[in-house]
Image (cartoon, rainbow, N blue to C red):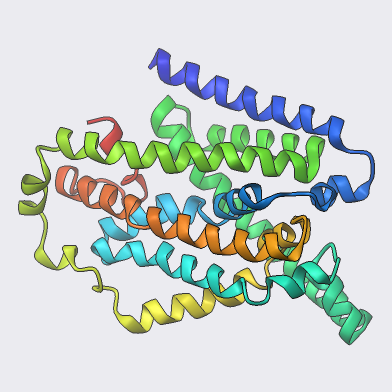
Length: 297
């Protein structure tokens, strides 16, 4: 437990340190909101991937795999990967617009009333998204450290708001890369250890209903629907399009989106497998806790 607390505290301090470091790179509003429109290929891909691989793509996918979707829960992220690759076809236009927000583009074309409506909708959606991501972070913090869910929400929320407010888009981009590496590398490395701790893959499979191991249990209608939904969301949501606005040029926006999709696709079934391991080993826990037990077997 001491090691876990040490890692947790170090991680939080590191995020805050990056926020204050990023403050030194800010000299105008463009630097603050869009990192000066100087984000390169790997930073664009990394910050996009970290933005889209969040609580829903980890805690949510594991919970779905633990529940009715089984292994096919991985399509939740795979569909998102396909969706963001499709967005690469319109990424040049988004970058070319030299805008700051999506409502700004809507307002240019349809006038002030449309700008106000889309601004309210965008703000509402992003507040809800932030709440979901903070809650997902709090779930992991609570299980690993023993803190209550409410305390976990306060801690993760305060740290997130603080480093974002202090360092702007530069801070968000750099911390996104760290989040992405920790998430992808950490969860991927956890899979073989979790499988071993649970008695091996053969034992895990023997404890699961056969339909839980189907790649398409969720159904093609749902998979296609997710792809369409993600394409529409990623091409209009501020959390994604701001990364395209911040890319250093149109080519970077396009290939950053494609690379992001490839990275997401490689990761997509990792949390689903962890959810299945949890189901085989802890069949009576809360589904939202399915991402955590494999680490504490």
